[in-house]
Image (cartoon, rainbow, N blue to C red):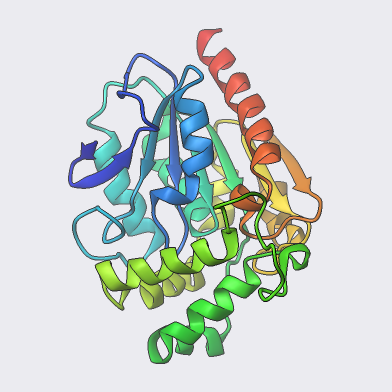
Length: 275
């Protein structure tokens, strides 16, 4: 589905604006496929699904935007064209910051915000920032290592996957490489620069007028659970879930636990809409 120039995966079902709508927002150097397991489940269990490719990512037109606020502006304009009454926003990593800003722009149209692998501030080391531009292949290798828990590393170990044909380590790296190949070399440094520069997290969290769910991986090396504490404390209505032995790529490493937490949260938000 195309939404004002942005690609939106609908989970294998036709989008129905009359249903409660879940909007999935991916993180840096990724696309909608990051959410393939969760988006398909929700689409087949009573929800309308929009798993977006951010501007300049995947199948979406344009160039990557260098500020979280600018991305939120672009998404708010696209989602504002829909007849869906209210949304549940679900964001991972950089996508969690975008979800916070997007909630401010959509206001009462947001019924809930779920932030996975989140942190504030989401600072990136100078060395990694430099590598994203000067040595992107090396940077993606590092990011891929740090995105997964030690339970599925070292990468030379076999099997490094939860089932036949599903190798989360190499699939994640290949996805990042595909984004670089299809969308260009500027995506990686632009995305990580946007995370590093974003300063509005606490204000956005304090302004939330809806419930917030935080899902963190206990073994996350990129955004450890303690890094989300300031955001959690700033939210008025919040719930925090920490998944044991799970890294930053929690939707792939622990998809069932992520699904359960999101399903319960979405049900709560949908009940609020019906009340």
